[in-house]
Image (cartoon, rainbow over all chains, first blue to last red; front, top):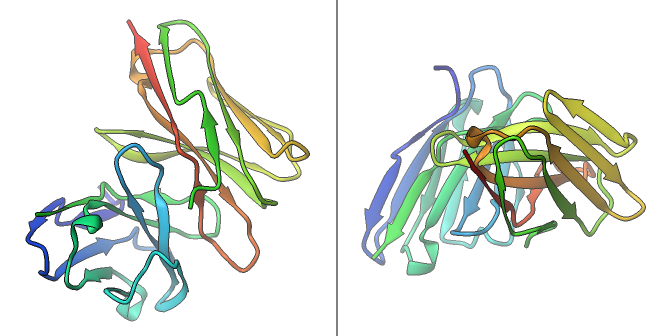
Length: 112
Length: 112
């Protein structure tokens, strides 16, 4: 399967801990996106990269959040000092152009 | 914040019936996309309609777009139990951004 992959699929952490998620996009895609989805809502945009450049960040992405895409391949999303409000599904997507986005299965974060 | 509002929030129909979902959005767009999400396969792109198009078909899907009313509809004909999922519209403004802004979704249940 050459789709978008995300690891881990599930993460349970205690409040105050740091967590890091990884996204591996479809190999030929130059754009990579992070979204967050809470129960009963649609995904909300967090940030996106074109190659290794981070071109846009949402106001949802507080100082505790940081994303990287070294060498324009995989990406990591780190959340420092997690809070219960960070509990959500974190989705990664990639695309070749600015149109259709291919989504990964997501990482479900639970902060206790 | 969510760009789109979808209507209805939930829809239950019998197999073979048609399902219609509506999406309204707030700002000018470059294109509008529909995605399906179920627990088994995550978010899957269904169809994209550009701002200069009024109607588009793909298999059993028909999408319309009315930019004067800032609204779109998704029609699924001859529904199947496998169509049971949440359906989201997502808009792309295309002005120096690639991000998608999702609606709140319609939960479709198709009974066999």
